[in-house]
Length: 258
Image (tube, rainbow, N blue to C red; front, side, top):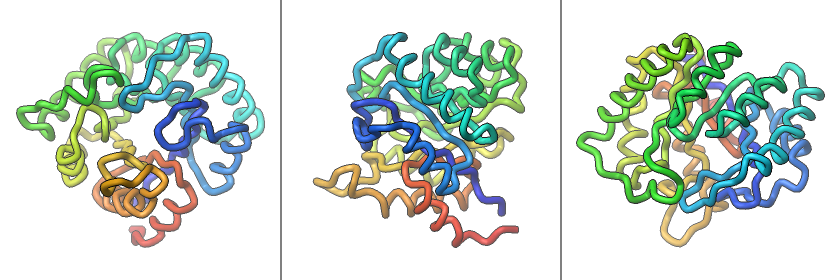
């Protein structure tokens, strides 16, 4: 089987749930991720953890655009993803060389698809509900696995109306977004269900709360994350979004390549 691409997380934020405020020099952090073997660098300037407060356009711009330019200049061949729900940030990032728009809002604004279409940029469509302020209360589903597939089908149609070809769409089930612990594990068990849509799957499990034991912190979740990512890789994940690039690559060496 083909091993998934590794998307290294670069949070340029003071309040992300795992590494908020720890990235003193984002370019140094990006360089480390690339040297460890990341295929993609995902730059985010606003935390989407439950309860996170919104960030202004100007603040997000100051956080992400300078480091994007630095990375692109030093590593012109690396694929860069911009993690944002703001179309204006996405447009600026694409103009500066971003290859992927990673939209954590679930395509709340169809303009994102238009930006991706007009720039021939890939777009990650992630399933979620509500906002970081209320998503933990929006976990009622008739059948979460089927409901997310229906969501994807509708969003694919929306993208088509905006002129975005399906070749440029990546799907993300949105682990931890408007889902409780049991639902997250049910989704993990059923990753392969979404392969029928014929589009790449991005899976973001890294250090998330549903992998936790009682009383632990995100720093304690490496082993659980690696196990979950190995399972995801063996069941159809095309891209793994991770904090721990070197460790993930090492664990993926267990998978036979066909």
